[in-house]
Length: 550
Image (cartoon, rainbow, N blue to C red; front, side, top):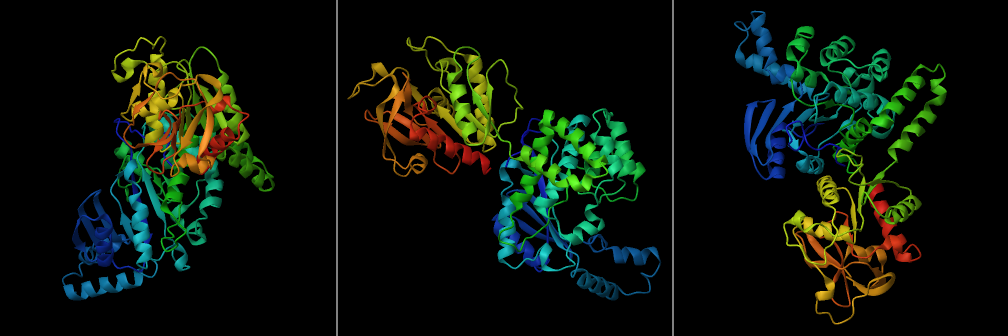
């Protein structure tokens, strides 16, 4: 899953860092495996308990035995501090250090720390996990004493106090659901590492009236949470925003300021084939999605506050979890259209999507916003795309255009493609996808030299042949289909990354799709105007299913 906001405050793709804890593969071997997996990098041994992999394709990685006393050569410094370094030989000190390390390895994990990875590169952590699993790494479940975690450090997209508070509220609201989903190990839960927030602080933050400035918010957070041991640790982020205030209050706390949240709830079941890093990542994305769904966030914050103060809340936990689950299952498909004219495509498309259990929202140039929740995108038909949008000449047949709609749909399409959101383009929508990907159009079909008359009818009078190896063929399970035809333009050359999924008897392209696993489907006909035909239901069902599994 991709977060609802992918761009950071500097208008760049956001980054995410990961910390993967494990045991059973010593550091030098781990370093070799990491270089092999990344197919780049060079090994630097900082000390026996800290290796750095430099100059990889993704930046610098760190491998450590996660015991700060050893990483920082704490024993030798301690001996110096108490004046015993002159009496104990270096070899003996090193032997003591090695003995401590040997004991530590029974309960202290090794840890891979990635550099901040751009959102389009984060799949590398799953590849690393799988390499280490195959080579015998052990995770949370391998020993009752292991309290290993998989920590996620998502860069904050905004440093506005309101956005940080909304993210914290979303975490509080979803916490019990996340615990059920991720099932953090009991040893981790009773240990201090992911200690829950105090209810008094949760109630304070949940109140709609809680609108502090940044200074007041940091003061409140430090008062209630003078520790790194929270399942969602804000201290690195707050130290990055105001290091003086944080370090003055917590001078002894080890904090590395960074512009990121520190999400510590997930386990690290690196030895389990069925455990995936992207499931943990998806749990964070859900927090961000709720934080951006401002209306639902406010509603659930009020209801969760009441639930917490209810003396019989223990009897109502199941009801609360069901309520959160309703929101989790709520997907919103954006259906685009014109500000004026008929709404028939919207009405029929919404009815078909509702039939398969997903919600739809109609966006047009007068009511859209860039940050709207979008789990799927349907680009409907309508007037011609303005030739100036793609710097082409205007054909005499192009009478009416809507440049503002073009701009809206192109923004939403780009967002959908970068966030791997399923897209279905219908008629004009298919043409827009093709143009966006660098393809071109025939401006007027009646001027083309065709073997057969091109029909123009709301009824299914146009015969198309479906490519046998296409995704569309898997959906429809048919070789041929009769469809309607309301277009006067058609695809001339395909855009990059697209392939033909169907053609009509004249050889005109009637369906396009991507040449990879992404769900990007363009249909030149209008299935929403054929609600009586079996093919319409298969198409909308497949689109709805694709949204539900993401």
